[in-house]
Structures are given as C-alpha cells and as structure tokens.
Image (cartoon, rainbow, N blue to C red; front, top):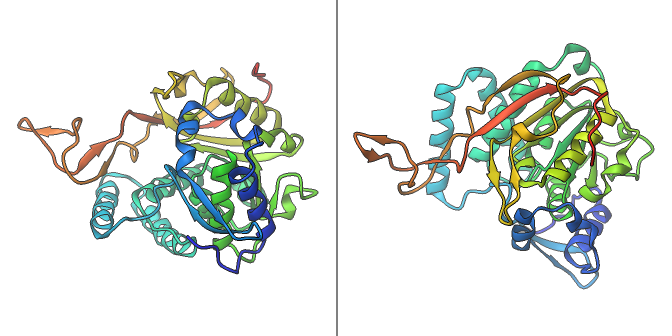
Length: 335
C-alpha cells in the first residue's frame, strides 16, 4: 500500500517506520516479543524514499483484512452469514457490520471474517458497558490490534473516546498508518507526547514503552487474539499495569486461545493468566465466533457427516475462550 498525502501526522508514521524497520540498533522492540513474533515480524516490510519517508507498507502475518480474490471474498461472506445465522444479537451485528464496511473502506482494508470477529467483540463490550461510562470520555487501551480494526470500530461507535494502541513496534506502524487513513481529522500522537490522553483521539504506545502511560486512568482494555502470542512474563506485565491504572469501574475483554504452544515451546493458556479471586467476570465461556472459517479444500480436523469431512470448513487450531471482567485493583502481580 502506498502512503497518501492525507496522513495528519506524517512525522509519527515516519518515526515509527524508521525506528522499527530501519534502525537495526533498536533492541527494545524485541524485548517483549515471544518466539511467535520473532518468527513472523520479518514478513512485514516498509519501503522508504531518499528522505526516509515511508512510501510503501506491506503487512505480514497479522490482520487478515484483505481479500486475495473473488473466491476468498465469497467464502468470507458465506462464513459471516453462517455465523449470523447461529449467533444472537443479529440485528446489532448487522448494523455494526454495515458501519465496519465503511470504516474498512476508509482504511484501505476489506470487511473480512477477521473484521467480523472484531465486530462481535465490540458488540459484547457495548452490551455490557455501564451507562455512566458511555456518558464520559473513555480511555480505551487496545492490546495488539493487527491493522487497528477494533480501535477504529470503537472510535466510530464512541467518538468521545481516546483509543490507546499498544503493540510491538512493527505492528504499531501499520496501525498508525491505517487509523490515520480512517480518521484524517483526528489527533494522532505518540504516548508521552500529549499532556493528557483526552487531548488526542489516538495514542500509539510501543510495547516496551508501556510504563510511559503509568498514572493515566483507563476504563476499558481489550486483548483479542494477542495475549496467546505472548510469554507469561509479558502477560503478567500487562495485568500488573491494568491493575495499577484502571479506574475502579473498568472492563477488560480478553479473547484468546485456551492453550497455545509457541514456536520456542512457550505455553500461553488463558485460564493461567494472572487472574485474581476478586476479579468479577461478567462473561466467561467459549467464543462462539472463533471456532471455524471457510477456505478451499478439506481441513484434516474438519467436522464429518457420515464419515466424510465437510469441505471448506476449517476449524481454528484450538478453542478460544473469552472473558469480560472487572479487574480487581488491589491485586498485585509479580513481574
């Protein structure tokens, strides 16, 4: 994708791109990366002009927000319709899907099945959001958001909010690009560059700089398919940060694999995260929209009818659970 001229904070994008794609001396960007991301970040690339400005960005193994042809588009739409047939809250999901299609177009992305999963996550948050929270300016921390879809959708639904994007630097670069496309009139700043979070629409924080945000107060945080790609110490760091900096009336939406083994053998399991007995779970169950997707051919683990594996239905590699939780602030996590 080529960078257009309507990026409101080009220096922000330039600094991120140069730091995480040109400066080989940077070590902080890898400090909090698991073997999964050490293996996959090489697939993301940025091209620069002679003045060091990013002119082309190519995303790697994250996001899943572009169709690669008519077949993938048709299968994705069929998969979405299948999910809509079996999920509750159909009317709200359809409304949000219509809004998401417009947001995706402005981001130069497609409304894929991965986008639909983020729509479902937003619907869950909306349904459980206290009225008093809706009436204030919310500070929302999105942990690991691929191309930035969930952050963009939350801002579209709740314009009076500040979205704080926290991710490894390479992925954050793509978020800074796509979100500025979607919100060219918004205020986009790096963490630490504004006196208060309320002065910006989007704040971008590299994972290694998370503590820059200490002392700010957050209402909501999300991790959708991101913590199951982290090591236990990194997950504990996020929980410790949230317990220090959440408002008492808070929501943490966590949708991650029940059990996942990373390339170097690290194990990530959602029920082993540093939850506390005083945490209050409003939702705690298997995630209904993260069970399967449609793709060509037959998957080895596809369901069977009369002993024959069904075509195009591909289950994900493992079950996903999701929790919507009011985190206790008194618990302390040792990192």
